[in-house]
Image 1 (cartoon, rainbow, N blue to C red):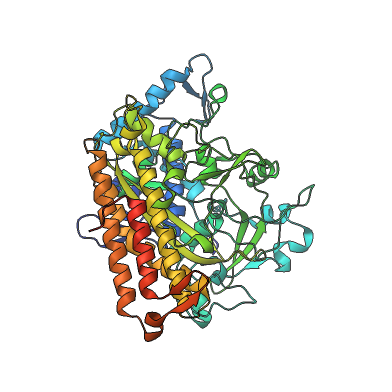
Image 2 (cartoon, rainbow, N blue to C red):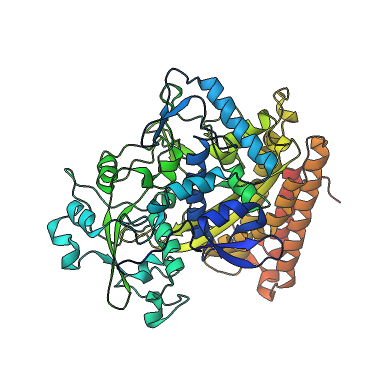
Length: 572
């Protein structure tokens, strides 16, 4: 493909849904930023792909608006040299003034309802960095760079270390040893992709890489190939009514994690002077100190050879990655505190936790009590800061969205096994109470967490009821009860999310919580009645236990007694 060009700034490759007629459209980077307010959302081949693309788009926006204001003017505390490279002017820089400038830029963009022309100007200036077939191909490396960074036996001419299209495509993820039987394509079609699809999957693969490929760049010390960075976190981001709103809400221009004494300008991967310079930096396994670099982190050195039929042959070599412990610059994840190591780690999803909805882990997203060792996701901290500065209204609905690609857990592959998408919506004043609400009983986050606690207690009561039914039927109790419990929680998900959406700061807390208790009791009764309707003579007859006879009626009575006790509701 000598002489060919496919420039991501002007060629259509990003899939979106239009706002006016809900039609799918494929657009270029410049088109997307100029018309983001006219698009509802990204619409790629998988939601995980949309997340990877979203972070790439945010890397562009973070880079641009950390240098230029909404009018396209360079901030007064920055300076440029003859090569148009931007740096901080130490004599002019003031932390408070710079923060005010960045928040003012965000506010102007919000008021305008669209991104300014400076984004297109940046992309036009860096157009060469976004050419998929350019001298420095986008998100790839040349033959020379690849050969210089990998062992001699892994060089391109030897043909080793290739990744097939069907492995790159995360809808298939088929290795050479294990066929993907239920893939959306069959046979040779698994290795077919259009050029715009290939671009999207290449970006996605860098973020959601498994560990089936074994080639690595040469380093002084041995290292194991890592999965893609987003694969290692529990993603959460804010979702707006339009693509513009989604991008703007997640455009973190002031990152509280960043060292106040060492403010760093964004540096996405394409702004490194050379691929070898980037890889040298990565070999040090240093945590990125800016979001643009984090959002464009490579997990693999990728090189594409095109044969005479214009078919791609993809070479892949692992690159050392930084540790996830205390990587608190990452704003799009929940965290868990490791008491033994005294460090925060991303709270990843696994196959065992697939059925656990976001609302059940509410306390991981919002620090309910000051004494809790919870580190709020950076995006939640950012939204809180926007609310404090009155840049978003107190009654604005805030939607926290989660998209997780869950691996199979196999150490040798880490291939995708499931994709989980979830969200929860609350008003800004509910999620972020006013500072004068010091009493726990008035703070909605505290009351929400308490409500979830007693809801989970009812869930435990229902699990015991399911266990009793399993015993009566002489079944393997644990999987049977787990299945019934999962179905019960599925029945709770929509009603509880609707309850959250309906909360306001003006609500009488007790009345709202009582309404949920009544709804919860209704759901329990309906679920138990379904079990009773499907009961068999064995269920009615029951069995003898050390605690007396156990049948479907005694099991039901025990459950309903516990429900009344734990909900503190009177027997009707």
